[in-house]
Length: 292
Image (cartoon, rainbow, N blue to C red; front, top):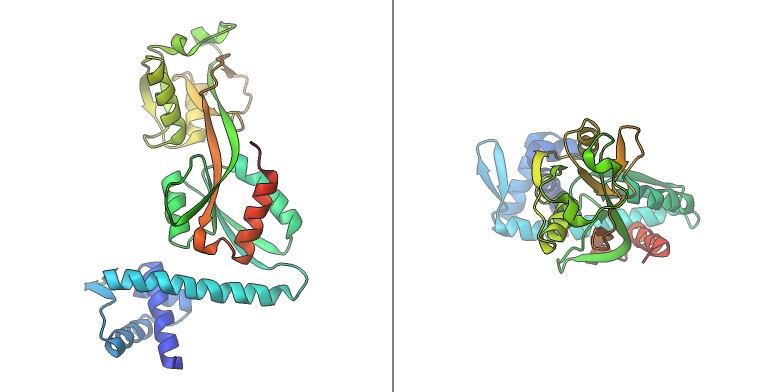
């Protein structure tokens, strides 16, 4: 492959990965006309159309999306080779990009990984499960930590731990004084819940449905921390994982004994990247920490 073609292919990858010619140019440290010219030459050289041009916006063609999947593997392998060379036979180097639904399960993993590989820089982003899967599939995240199994043939999904859920309320709520409660006692209660699609909410609704219990969702909030504060302000009952619940003088956990109220934490990565240096070491470390 000629040097010109290598430059053209790198220009395409940058523009496709970062969503446009200008963003790709900033990533490569070149001008926008330069990267546009490289892409145009690549299209002319092979007689293909990689982008639809819509004014200043560009959108990948089907052929462009197929090529992007290949260039992802190409430049990921290049980064892997540089990381291997940088370690110099002693300590691992590079950056591991982790995506997680929350901090409580992933931080012990990060702590242990950093203890084992202090030379590795960790970059972390928080998001919902859908965003995490998209980031891993799009090579924007190396590994993901989320609270449900991922049924996608491109994803390697490893169970990590079973995570109980707790229901809590304001200390002045009528249920707060009860010594024992069952799921049936929640009938007609007002809840503060995460948005539809939240795994915790889905599990709660499934358990309520199996027990013929109906509750109200008076407040819907897209943040775990905001749910907690809303419950602390007396806006309704809330549900979070036991690891995420933080004792607060304003709230109490309800003594509900229900073996069905739990989620299962999973660690995911692309199957094709499972043997990549940093990804494989993170997955091995998570497997050592695995709790049935």
